[in-house]
Image (cartoon, rainbow, N blue to C red; front, top):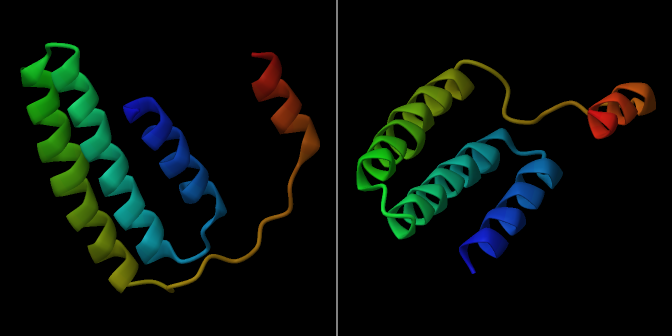
Length: 88
């Protein structure tokens, strides 16, 4: 179930244009990852992921967005780098 939530959150991260929504979803992604680490009996890693991933990184990214624009410009899809990543 958690892996399905991670996949849905990752797809949401890729499709959104609002940078604030992307930052919030990345915080949610970190919290789901922390829950996954707890299920794998790694509470120390889960605590670090929750503190750094969902806490500090989210606050820093929101601060950076407050100094820039709110929407991302459309980026054309490049096929060659996508094929290289898929082959790797």
